[in-house]
Length: 204
Image (cartoon, rainbow, N blue to C red; front, side):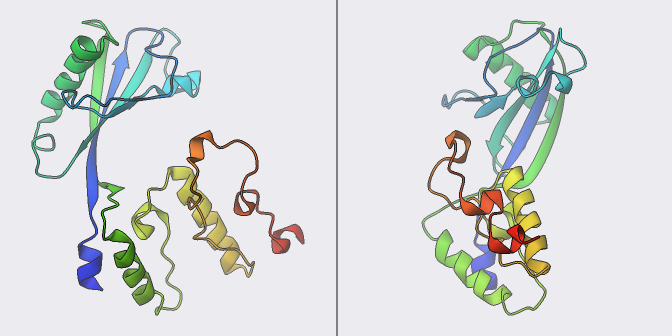
């Protein structure tokens, strides 16, 4: 079991948060960058969720996600160097900002941010789950606990469902983020667990 658990792979991430002196960079919330010559693979603009996420309407912010592995060339870059490279790629390769528009930045590093679904991960997960299920009162949830590519809302939902499970309701707290459809484009017809429509909850 220990060998199976220790061989599960996660990728690390460096997030570069930029303050940009313009009202908006893009109308999209997320943009994926498939150019291997660009240091970041995804960016999002929080202001497109809510204007409350910036100090004033004349500025915006960007979060650039640099996918990496601890010890590789990207991870070993200094915070200043990786921020400068991100700004350079935004200006020169993508043309999303002009020189001088980025007025501040902050770099945040996170280990084991993304579970890697390699060819052998599924049987390893089952082996680990089978072992951990022996321990009464131990519940494994969330992205790190399940080695599942959960969004934050998925992990919160797991926790809420686990709470109901502990109160005696018949809910499967692990049946989250298991649908084959891409979650962010599904509209209507939510699965039963999303609406908490189990009989126990309705009887409250």
